[in-house]
Length: 236
Image (tube, rainbow, N blue to C red; front, side, top):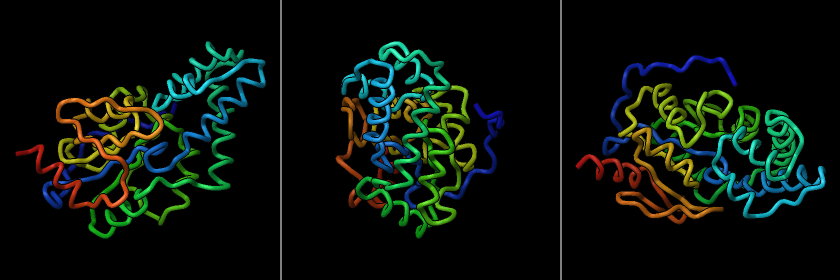
């Protein structure tokens, strides 16, 4: 884990369209469709040690902190390695796959481009580690994200709200005036606990309905104005 201190909120960013101050993107499954890369890496590692992996096991890990997933793999693989070693082995495979090809999720890059054009700050909030996040960010225009929060930079991973609170502090925004985009129940729980206006975009695993929870099929065609409307609607 990085020893970078958790920043304290600074000056609050100017209020944008409809009160929207920032858009916070999860990475795996929301910005990029890397979950199949993770699942393939899990299968390869477990099978190397004579175990058998299943989609049920793989889907149980979606959105989790990597060390939490590694502990699960160690127990259920079983894989006789320490969890930090398991994480690094998985990351090696996924980073290599991302460098070969990044499978962008529909509408994600277009929404990022519109945020840049509209001057709406963005952050990447992911439980993947920095070296994977950097491999993805390298394929986007420089300065796309005003803040990047990764799983090796926080003490408590999703569903704890620390990652989203950290992103808001780095951007100097109020959580209730941000929109967080998430594809997993764990990520949705994290963003909601941080106080963000949270949009659930289920992909590999279902996200149950809940009172006031916003759900979309994908980000295709989703605009800054629509996200701003979600913030305005919550504040009414």
